[in-house]
Amino acid sequence: MVTKQIDHSSSEIIAEDIENGNEMPNGFYPKIKEMFRYSFIEFLQDISKWLIIGLLISALIAAIIPDDFFAVNLRSNFIGMLIILVISGPVYICATASVSLAAVLMMKGFSPGAALVLLMAGPATNAATITMIGKVLGKKSLISYLGTIITGALLAGLFIDYILPPEWFKLSEHFGHMGHNHQEMLPLWLKTGSAILLSLLILNGYLQKYLTSRKIKMEAMTSSWSIFNSDRITTIQVGGMTCNHCKENVENSIRSVKGVEEVDVDLTTGIVNIKGKSIDMKKILSGIKDIGYQIKSEDI
Image 1: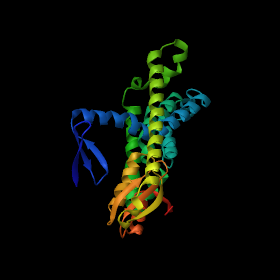
Image 2 (image 1 turned 90 degrees about the horizontal axis):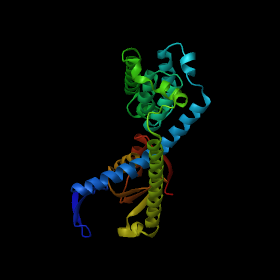
Image 3 (image 1 turned 120 degrees about the vertical axis):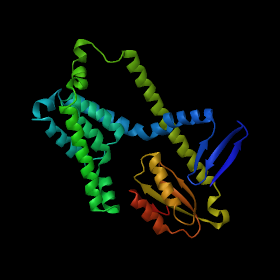
């Protein structure tokens, strides 16, 4: 069901999607404003943690491992791809973090094809995903899923290493000698300015996240939700939510259960408040587990 409300302060019509709990602005300028808000606040909140982790791990690898170490010690590019595949398979590597990791591994001697295997297989395969697919869809679907990703990643890696021109992928050589010949890919002012700007945007994202979380907690403390129409409020804590997409998945799963009227999810704490009458909590908990999240506690 979709209703419309008018913001009298700005005389702009805002369409509200009651089912998903999202406000969708109408009009060119409101949409542009929402685009920038999502890009520089919500999206950054989702990726900043993994971006920082990826950069720190990449910096550690760059400092510890000698340049061209893997190029000297690996017998072939294909062996490098297999090593990357074995490492990235069970371990969760966020797509955001994998970019910097792929770049530094190329600096240390891995082939561009091996870096592509990391970019393809790392975010798509991990122990949690493998377990969930096997449990929900069955072993045959899991084997098909893993086989498709592994085969596709290896074929793409071989295509890059043995068919595309090697000079297209001179990242490691460029950066390996950059300190000696004083050649730089980008001017210093642009690199420094971009780093400062990104740092400020990340800090702002965390600040906005903290303020939003605090506002939700304050509203929960002062709300008359729990006594309104004698509806019961059930509180659970869900683990495994790392981004706003995870939050939406949990909300949609809970809303699909008959009797649920409202759902409030705090991404920071994992606390979920569920309002409604005659709710089948077993169905709610089962639905959350089926989409890959954990129930930490109930009625907290």
